[in-house]
Image (cartoon, rainbow, N blue to C red):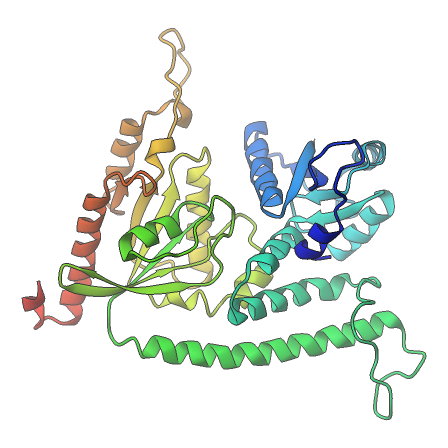
Length: 409
């Protein structure tokens, strides 16, 4: 069931009498041995934010410390019984797991639960399906969705058109429903891949027609303020919202600083455990990143795990072949940064939470291998310095490409 279908079927009030019309969910995560409790809570905070984006309200969390998730039921048998009992007693609508479940895990857990289940990948796909606007984005997300569903079929596709029948079909009237469903989805996957190849060629022509302008791409974790920054720089109206994956379609704008033009693109945000199906199906959108001359890596400095988010983005850039691009690190949301000053008698080593914004600035600026800046796109703090730095970097790339056109600046 898609996000839009769920919105139409949610009861006006919950079984407990709560007036909130959204589905009620519990979140489930396995805490690995190399994770501490605080990090596990922050990962669940992100999962809850994903649920909120999908119009689902989380009401309880279940965690269990294990070396690795159970290959059969993700958590231990006792924990699964506890989750099932709670869901039955509280009439919970959905259980959301903070990892991608294998087909066998899904089947085993479904037998134990009295309600529907989602894994992290299914939740992200639902969000993408509801937020895709252009035909290109819709085709990409539909392809990822079918590739995710194919190995997980268990009679879920009865709403799809039925078998063709007639001479030459693999089965007859007795062909099993699940085999028919698989065949239908495989055909749709093949059709979507062909559609994407056509769109890919069109997109490649569009990129080649942009001439030899310097290309700058905004990259970063989801919900760090890339679209807000894009609007300020390009004076455009790119959709920006305080939700995950507000932007799915790459937006490209021509920007002119003084007399120096360049192209600026806003790309889809990355996230921890981004489904591989989405990375693969969005490969053409990510060509904007691969073909960029400069990456502006936007970071939410107010997020408690911003360093982990930086690592996720760097890893994803490596995976798509853009790990060696020059990077300008932009620490956004300085207006929302908070820190806790250590007490004078506290002799324990300071943690990241004890560092003031000035301390962070000194530590990151000292890393001369990556130029960086601290600003607030929302409050328009330090934007002139950002524009000046970006102008200098674009001018340097342009001068290297056209050494005889330096009269432009």
